[in-house]
Image 1 (tube, one colour):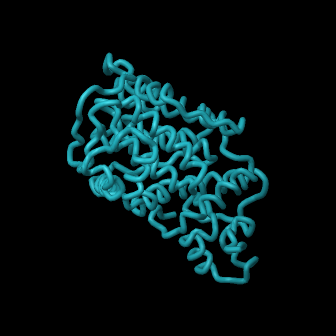
Image 2: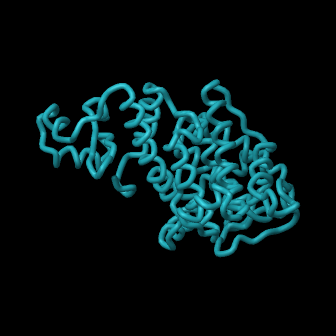
Length: 320
């Protein structure tokens, strides 16, 4: 199924609730191929955004120990560990987000790469090619306000809207000398998993994909193009809301829904057999072409296997 299909992002709530009914997110383990695939896909795309390119074959060589690439291995292992932590908190109906987590993510990402891992920067920094002007002092305080706004957004706004705002604010603050994109994307997915969703893949392997991401960031961080206000919740929130979050929310939506749909279909399959589209079409008394349109519009969840689409009448998402 195409990642570019036009789907109302509000359906994320409906889908996450359906996944929860079917047993929720699966355990993160080497025996779970879906998680391993998601982690590998994210590792390659997220690193590519920062100019660290690795093929599927090279990634496998790094993970098996046949090739050394600390930044690649660190990303995969950090994501695996942090996401497992988020999943356990979600299952315990707990939520934890603090400065220690932010520092830990950076420290893990830069193991054997730099001695300054986990340390917030001191002084000004410029983001190449970006108009946003990060703060040049009080970085600890800005991060604390970021964390407070994250918690507030997750309570007040739909998940994708909250995730988009948290990501934009973190990247605008740019608290580390290096690796802010990697830290920010892992934090983004920590929050997504804490909300019962699988990690989001922000595509970045092609130049076109990276450009789409950069443009989405720039559209949303306009409130910080002239500099940063004092590290106070009300001030930062007001500046943050000056941005256009449509592009980044759409990008996050396209990076989440294919994964969410696949996990739903696999979870459903553990309870009932998926059916060929022909049988599903007979149930609804429509043509297969109609079902394909439903799938494109996000009304019917389907799983592609051996080049064939499988679904079930119970995977139809009603507008009611």
